[in-house]
Amino acid sequence: MSKLFMYGTSLEGIEQLMVMVPNFQPRRSGIVINNYFNCEGGAKDCNCNLININNGWNECGYIGSDLKINVDRCRYKDLVRECFAKINNYYVQERLKSLVSKFKGEIFLNHNHKERFYNFLQKKSLDINDISLGYITILFLLTADESLWKSSEDIVSQGKIDLKQICLKEIDTEAYALYQTAKTISTGKECIKINELADEELIDDMTFKAIINSALINRYGAEIFLITK
Image (cartoon, rainbow, N blue to C red; front, side, top):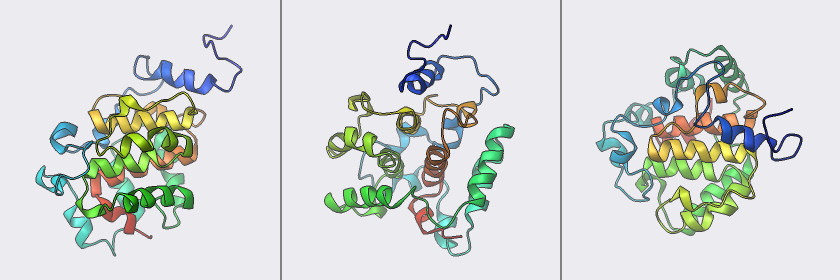
C-alpha cells in the first residue's frame, strides 16, 4: 500500500513534494539549494520581498557588475556553470547540460510567462532597474505558472510579497515547486533541495528551467534577460 493518501489521484505529486520538503530523508543528496540562490548578506539584508530598495543588491556586495559590463560577451552556459558547478549531484548536472543545450536565447519559459512578468511591471509603472533583485526573482517565479500567478497577483500588487498569504489550493506539483523556490529566496530557509531538482518525475523540465534561471537572476541581476547565446 502506498504511503501517500492521494496515491493515484491528480494530487499525488503535490503530496509527495509536501512530504519531501522540508521534513524528509534525502534519497541522494542533502545539499540545500539556498546556497545557490541568496546573496552573501542573506535574504534579510537584501530586502527581497520589497519592491523599491534602490538597487540594494549592489550594496550588499553581490555579483552583478561584471555581467552588466560584459553582457554582450557572456554566454548562458558559462553563467550556469559558474553558478552550479559545485553541485555534486550527477542527475542535476545532467539536467543542467540538457538545459544549456536547449537554450535558444530566452530566459522566460514562453511568451505567456514573459507577458505576465512585464505586464505587471508596466501596470505598476515599475522600472526593472529600480526594483529589489530578490523581488524580481520572486516575480519571475510566480509569473512562470498561470495558476500560481492567479493566486498571487493581488498579493504581489500590494507592494510587498507575503508568500504566506498565497492560496495554494488550485496549484499543481510544478507550481508548488516554484512557490517553494520563491520561499527559499524570500526567507533563506531550506524549502527545496538539490535532490528534488534531480528528480524529473517530481520537477519537470520547464519548472527546472524556471528554478535554475531564477537563481541566475538572483545572482547576476536583470541583465540576465539580455543574454541571447
